[in-house]
Image 1 (cartoon, rainbow, N blue to C red):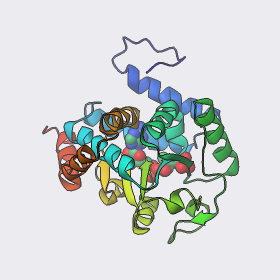
Image 2: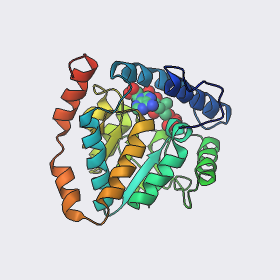
Image 3: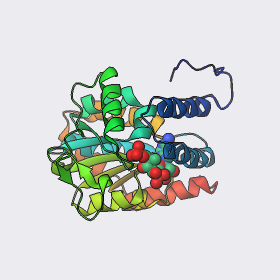
Image 4: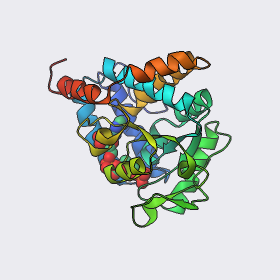
Length: 247
Ligand code: PTJ
């Protein structure tokens, strides 16, 4: 990871400080909501307890997620204000490696922030960004946070939702969508309802999933094997044990 922030690479918490800087810069740019600062702090605490590393079960989850994205009829990677600030180029690479659409989809939705995030993703190489039409809805949710593109998340059979609010994760799951979640908290409702919970920091999880996608591309047998080898419940138990200091 590199950025234009003045943090010495020798600092023991270099990655963490850089991540904070990116979220701060996201707020300044009008991409990330102020609540995003709080969400980041929560995630950081879990990452600290996990040892700021990708545990084996999270690596298997990223592989299964890549396999689901590759074998979907219509896969969508949902992008919120935190994800856009932290891994814009990496999300574009994942969508290119898997053929998934990118859709800006916000919990605290404003048209201005949607447009800024779409522009930011285009600056990082995205050719098409969905989320601006918002002509569909997630059933069972009220208000602005229910809005999606009818030909995007509204039509998808597989959706990757990083750092999602639990309520929306549950409602998306009830649409019958296969839900892939990135969340550092294995106890969060989003992680608990996901078909594939990736308990890892998004700054590591997205590049890891892209590496697996490049490896699995064009090999349906290997994709099936990655999906079959993954056990969501066992992965959550393993992550909880790692946080408690067991693994
Ligand atoms: O941009 P918007 O309006 O869509 O809002 C985005 C946030 C993240 C603010 C919104 O969805 C929200 O409030 O989410 P929550 O309910 O705070 O949940 C965020 C989850 O992501 C928490 O369980 C955190 O532990 C987790 N998390 C935070 N930072 C990271 C993370 N997981 C992985 N990597 C991170 N860097």
